Image (tube, rainbow, N blue to C red; front, side):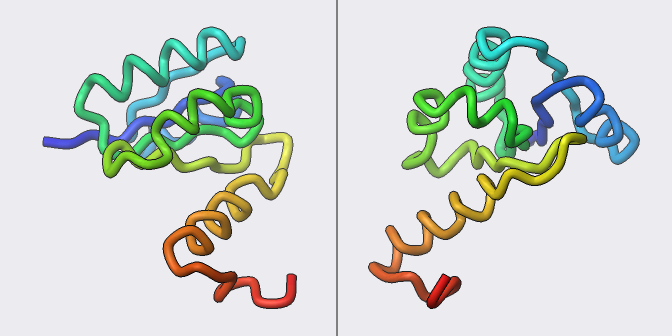
Length: 106
């Protein structure tokens, strides 16, 4: 059975534990990269990662961008939305369809 994980700073992710998701707090990009690699090897189908941490790990995220599993999805943290998650969706749609059909004109 597949699992769902949430990765990021402690303050941003601990609320997800109340929803039954497994949380993995990290405090440095190095810890985040190591945790992300470990989670991808442990049957996690979805890994939510805070946008702040994702911004520190572009090479790691690129490694999983073409993979079917796991889906690595950036989410806003307690410090607000950086827009990274929506930019990743836009890029994926452009790559799949060949043009910007969602954010036409933005």
